Length: 194
Image (cartoon, rainbow, N blue to C red):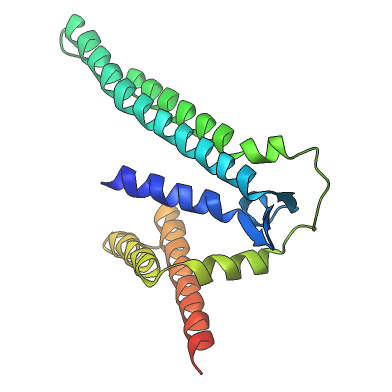
């Protein structure tokens, strides 16, 4: 299921913020922030709490979204089967806000808890982080990204007025993403060759 894969990937990315450093770990927010030392036990607690928070968030969504949909249907029934789009957009916006704010809170728990600790190392450069992310990406993930970008390009290429307005912006953004992805794949392939 998509949500399970999404949560599994989120747990994995969250855990990757803790990089091994001898018997301890260095926590770097989003893999590039200033490093702060944590013990293996602290790392496990942070990961366990993040996982627990994700499970609570998933249960909240699985219970809350259907209840909201039922309320909207009941509201529409009371108004003769019609509901204004504004109500739908408002409810979607509220749920999106709840999810994003909860996610943000869970993701930044280690940063808040470790803010008082001295820095063990300075921030990593964007180039180093990009190299780490591409090196850790599986070929399946790279292929999925390429396929998604190609589908976006195909969708916009089929439009009659491709090079006008938003069509042009989206088409060139997707094409730029494809070029960047191909460049990363070629760099990665070149590094693996003897």
